[in-house]
Length: 164
Image (cartoon, rainbow, N blue to C red):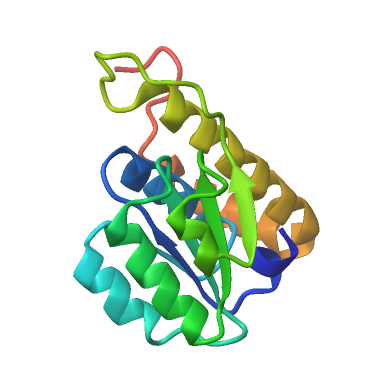
C-alpha cells in the first residue's frame, strides 16, 4: 500500500482473466488520481516496463505464478529499479523471483468447467480491493476530491431514479 500510494507511476500486468483484474485495479487507481496503466498486451507491457524507475511500481497478476507474458514485464521493471509486486496463487512460482512484495491469493483448485477462472479471479479481486482501500485511505486528502471529480464528470450520464 505504501509503495503504491507514493508511486510516480503504476504499471499493472495481467492476461486473460487476470487481465480483467488488472483493468479493475487500473480503473480504481485512476479514479483517485494516481497515474496507472494496465497492460494485457505483452509487447506493450515490456516496452512500458523499460521506462520504470525507482519511484515507480509494477504489479503482476497471475494465478499460476508462471505466466510468461506477465513475468517478463515484471522482470524488466525489477531490473530497472521499480518496486515490484506479485499477486499470485503460487507464492513459490516463477513470478515471485522478481517481486519485492508477494500477495498470495486463494489457492483453491478451479473446477473443470473453469469459466473465466472464477475462484482465482474472485480472490484476485479481493486482494485488489484491499489494496485500493488501503491506498485510498493513505492518500485520502487527494483521493477523495479526485473520486468526487470523477463521479461528477459522469453524473450526467446516469438516468435519474424512475427515469427512462
